[in-house]
Length: 286
Length: 304
Image (cartoon, rainbow over all chains, first blue to last red; front, side):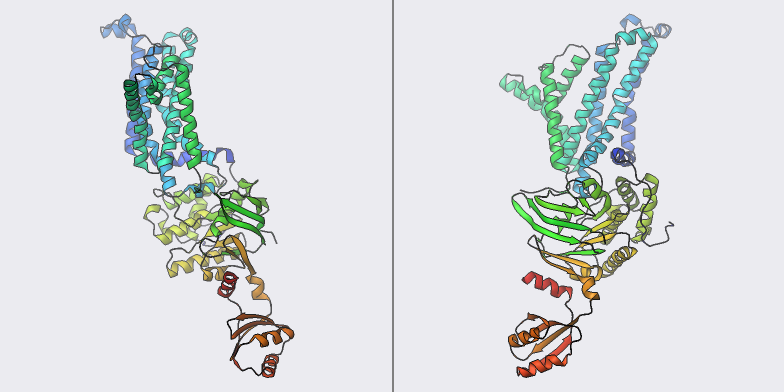
């Protein structure tokens, strides 16, 4: 129908499958996010460390170039679990910063503008809503964490050969699993806090607070009570414990691996509970 | 005619308070008005039909689908225009309506085409690339209507659509509702406390009070039936007159001590009224033809 005919016309065309409708939210969110030059610049800056690592891997296997640069291959640090553990810490920190920038703008504006019942009065569920919003973070964080991590693994394989890849296959699993855990935890915390406070700036501050204040309080509790219980609220330490275990490096944290997994499980459950409570069309005041 | 909304002993509790109590009705009109004072449960009923509030007792069906068991089918057939502000401020109108269309199942290209169409239809064609945050109240109401009809629903639920509109915008909104009704492609459920809006657009009216149905009126049938509505005013108390007129076949309702409204039977001779009054030695001060307005119906229901 031409747009100049201003009479109501019914729609009788085809409909899309409900399963992938959650991705519509992600698509529109990306369109909005990538209008920000800061985000594009930050994403580019996040690629600096993986790129440097790639150059380092190439360099450490290129003897003529090392000789030209007057470097000795024996003096170069090995490409092992420790190397990828450091990579996870660096890129994980950048992922955290990216989450504090992107996360609060996902759910809080919808709740503040009362847009929830526009979404939920359609054939679109709360689970699809959360999945759609979470996809935004999961894909964005994947782009700067495990995807370049796997690229580094492949570069190392290309330089050394498939034998190295076979012996160090566990490294690939550790990169993917370790960083997926981190981005899932970050995404859930960002969405839950953004849904809880309904205000973008406050949500951003709260995300920072959960990690930094958690670390500070944790250290204070440990010092005052002379126990290690403070480590339970220090999420950075919790994740570092898991990464050290996954990359078979020595851990300097106060937590055991089982305790760290339990803390992460509880954190995720708490975030899901908060999302289930807040992502509704209407709140019933009892 | 297909039943649009069917309620059977439907009750809804929020917290420990019962908001809707034993609603039983079948509505099948092209446009249905939901009336009631503030707090009567109109919006709660709408939100229950949309599946936002759980049903405590009884059943409800929208276009044949159970609201508890077939929530997705119900929401696929319904377009909802909420009462309160609900939009995404930093989106343009066309992007917003397109996204809502896509979420309702339209493919991306069709959703874009429909978004342009419906925005022109509601009169926002020229402003469709402006951000919603810059819209006036009237424009926001129109964009809410646009998002509700973009996917071509079978039932359009409008919750206080003329709220905050100036007279010309209100007329435009009512004209659009009548146009949608007359297109014959969707049913309209209009929730309002403005009787004039409902009277101008609706065929059926359901009046709620304190969570209960207090009156149901089929305005279309009442308008079409060849009944004669007469109102008389007497000089004295008319209790005896009402009784005598009922005996000769009139249906009387009493409004005040000196006013009497009645529906006359077929082939009734008006002179009979004067004869009966003369017999009772009663002076008729005024007699005029009059039919109950929606306001009369509403006030009677509220007094009941």
